[in-house]
Image 1 (cartoon, helix red, strand yellow):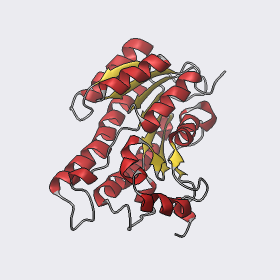
Image 2 (cartoon, helix red, strand yellow):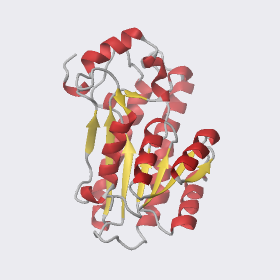
Image 3 (cartoon, one colour):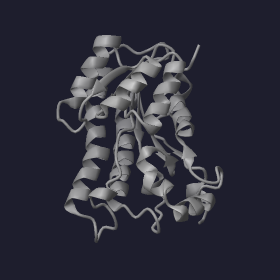
Length: 260
């Protein structure tokens, strides 16, 4: 039996890390609902994994409640939430703070922080009133942080709104973990380094960045694969992590300790 057998999971995002996690979770026997604004990738992932699909804009105020309602209508409960969906605000004006535009700031925080907050609010509200599972846990929340919130890299990744948003994700998650532990709800954060996903395409197209990554992420000699992050996510969402909460797990191939 897989670590996630019969668990009902919501995963936001249907490319990159979100897609890799959905595929692995479904293979372990989880019941998965994926949510995305990208209709094509959402339904392709659903067809490949058997996952339920919710298509819409996560920024809409009622999106989180709609996703939860869909999950409950299909599975009857929600055991785990993985908040993956987000964006790089660079093309909207994110950058060093003295250059960051209002649009870059607002869109970056909205997509990386506000959507996470609303999903947590809806899902935790449900977890509080549902029966614990066989391990005595009512549910697990996993939020997507970033190594840039703790270990900034100024030469190639000076996106200060993004770092601010991910830092806030970590702070909120730790506060949630402390508050909800007595209710048997776990809350953790994943902090990846540079991962090969559609969001990192700019870096993938830069020979200078790729060469730098061979030294910055020495364990992989370059970019982290989405599947490596997904494996960590499955552990933190599953029964093997039943005593872990309030933690930030780095999946950075040595970024934070490389000294580069």
